[in-house]
Amino acid sequence: MKPLRAGLFLDRDGTINTEVDFLRTADEVRLIPGAARAIREANHAGFPVVVMTNQSGIARGYLTEDDLARVHVRLRELLAVEGAHVDAIEYCPHHPTAGRPPYHVECDCRKPGTGMLRRAAERLGIDLVASYVVGDRCVDMEAGRRAGCRTVLVLTGYGETEREECLQRLTIDHIAPDLYAAWSFIRHHVHPH
Image (cartoon, rainbow, N blue to C red; front, side):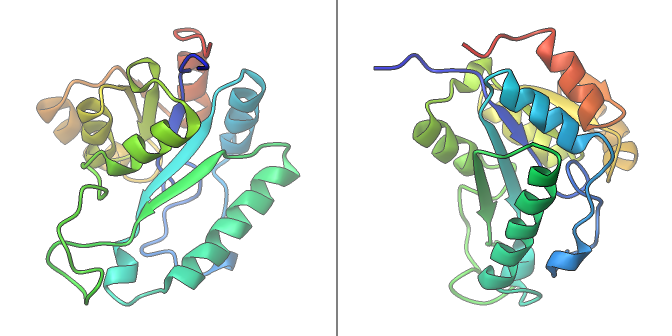
């Protein structure tokens, strides 16, 4: 059996691409400067890179899973232009109190739940305890903590707004201005193999 390796779990909106309230279409996808470079360098360093995103807009009827698939195709295209790729995209289409069946459910995948992290870790041979979660919201930090990962809050997206709440409620390993700065911190603190 291959030894497990450290992974990089990234929130999507506000971390990799600019925050758009309920991003619905592929042409709304805009990469945050430096994000593709961070992912490319993580790829070259041997880190599996996983995107994990709550997408309750599906439960709420704002977009379909097909719309989301097109958004993710576009995200992968924009990353590929800069020589970067993600190894997996995990998403949660559910919401516990809003929306319609079959998405109107309590689930273990909606962050701060750890379902998306656990699924990807199992499939890609990732050691959660050696891994990092990077995101712009307290739910990202909480999901990372619950899964045993280290956490980095970025100040893009909602990060600046949620920073104080996150610091009061949670232990965060590092705060970075953006994904590239987060990656620069991580690569000096962990070895992927």
